[in-house]
Image 1 (cartoon, rainbow, N blue to C red):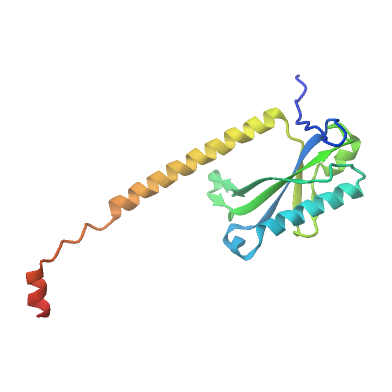
Image 2 (image 1 turned 90 degrees about the vertical axis):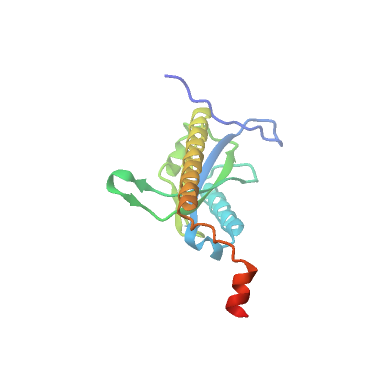
Length: 177
């Protein structure tokens, strides 16, 4: 078994490596996203992450970075079920005194409740391998989306009504005098 390769950005203040971690949570349903300031919701997520890590005694770099913002939807093809799409955000915290096997991280394994967003926050320690898999998944989703748009565009074009025939001025003069 190979040891996972973790992301370890260097702490600019100390020159020591940190441990990059991800915290992901739904911000809102896509259909109601216009009602929210998503930047504020992401800041709320970062604030809850900072507060929770402080309660656990886990030291991090002062800045929690914004990661990905994605629209995700749970689809169960076998059951023909799809949940409403939601806007998810990921923020990154950089641990300065914890390693992946640190027992303090066990408290994060099941995630935690965000008080500001009133939702669950998932925790992940990304590896080079997990990031490569995520990139492949995103590329496959984009390809699937592009194929859907192309198919829908072709169907719309084939269903478009025939171009209206031009009416000559003589006909218009006859009708409207």
